[in-house]
Image 1: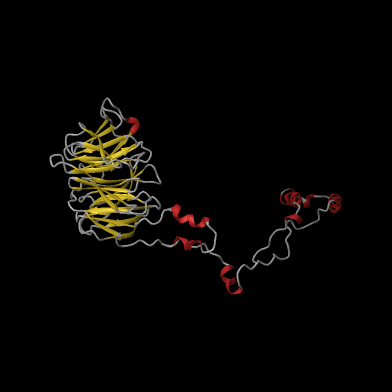
Image 2 (image 1 turned 135 degrees about the vertical axis):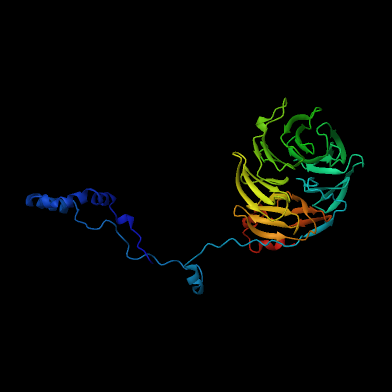
Length: 422
């Protein structure tokens, strides 16, 4: 009702273009025309129907809108607004708590991992336990002898069936969790305990207290295929990028290295792509961004307390956020642009951040000691955290994945949600 709609069927676009261009020039030069020429122009215009003064033609009145709702709602429907995305509810307490006796309270170890088969592995002292999330059953995989233990790291292979177990005596054991049997032992990689590991297809990368990083091809007898030397102290964090092209390593020497697989050499130690020295304390927490392949988040220990973001193509530090406490672990959400960090003294909390603003969305408390380890469920919804208080807690922090959110929209039947009540 507040505007006229041009009626294109009543328009002459050729005439309109002429009047907006050539016609204007003629009007400007009319004062120089002789009376005879002016009379001829008027007669020609009459003959060719060029005496029109309007270029656009309009309808008298637009049609009345169709009323889709009862009259009492007409005012609201006349000004539709885009509905804002509802704010997600984030439970402030853990949905489940399990005892984790004899969990080693050591910042430099990695004793918790959640595999693609939805089985959680946790090392308690010399024993590795498996907790099946589908039926909440617990089983013991292996107990290591005292002279070889304790277990210092666990890491699931991508298939969710095979698991690597790093030991205090520098060895790494490979186990088939389905058959419950040991497949092989990797020796000669390190001179001391293996505190961090990361899989890249059939390559198992191990990091030791000796500062070395070793790529092991688990398919062959001579398994050591590459060695990365750059850290002067214990390697406490290892993470491969999703593409498997870049490896991030963090150490007790406060350094983060980015290694590129294309630069690897079996003949000599590989040179790093970037050496990042901005942290002022040990760097164990590493997390590759799932929605931006060259974005890496790193967290510093008690003397640093910051989360830093890096462009791993250029080595540039994009942002640094002071969290106020030791950063023990980092996890990106698979469903939203959010980052979860776990902390030590004083609150021993999990903090959920919105990226890239780094506004705090929630602080989850419950642990009474530093939250050393975190692992994420395969669907991305649930996070497990293990702390020095010898408890394992499960948090529904990241919400429902996008696939599950959109699935009900496919079924248009009335009350189709009723058969999903549980």
